[in-house]
Length: 249
Ligand SMILES: NC(=O)c1ccc[n+]([C@@H]2O[C@H](COP(=O)([O-])OP(=O)(O)OC[C@H]3O[C@@H](n4cnc5c(N)ncnc54)[C@H](O)[C@@H]3O)[C@@H](O)[C@H]2O)c1
Image (cartoon, rainbow, N blue to C red; front, side, top):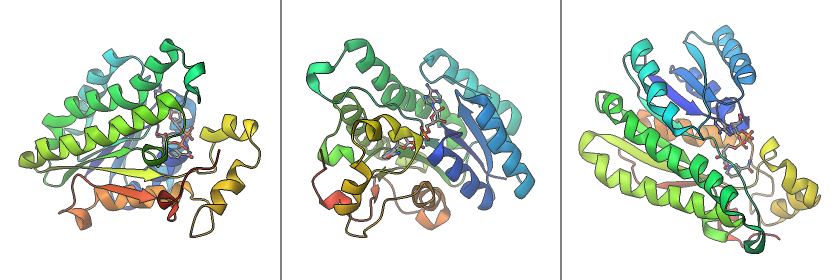
């Protein structure tokens, strides 16, 4: 049975992805700092799907914990077929408010930890017949929103393209999804700052609605599947067309 590791697996996109991959027959490992919620998602998945679902307490800011995470997966399952680098962190919006500690914290969660997880996962992924990495970036790499956040997600796109080139010979596909604004706890602070933000995003979206965690999970599950077996180095925009428009303030 294929195995997928999903960081931030307790969150909106992460839990939707875990459910969808479980539906597609993957056993799932949810690595999250919120172990209570991760365990609850795993309980629910085990009840509704005939797969294994395991929650592992992980703080991506603690980069020393990443190798033990992959070791634990190797020990329990002996394989890894898909790595979904999904956990993310926002930071200050404007350049004048950027604090270097916060900048480093955002870059660590959104870029350094995904890079290290890719590095640590290579030996297990190499042994899989249909291995892939899916990085959860953001539409902001096109439009710019939040200095550290946008820089980190742009870096994640660069990482995706670079690893697609380097790991192709090992038959490991590397892709990214770039969602637009979703109604999730992730945007709580932004919505508190600007209560019409969701409405503004709806207006710039040609398909006329906001995206859902399931929309993003569907794109991730596709990229992780054999249906995408000749797709690597790509960025799948899950934006209802909003990738074609400038951002609202
Ligand atoms: N929500 C949006 O509008 C939106 C838009 C574009 C991209 N994204 C990206 O989608 C991804 C998922 O976002 P979401 O909306 O599901 O957010 P969410 O807040 O619902 O979930 C994020 C999850 O990551 C976990 N997490 C946070 N810090 C962690 C850490 N240090 N170590 C381990 N786990 C940690 C949280 O506990 C949570 O379960 C993020 O990378 C985000 O940047 C979100």
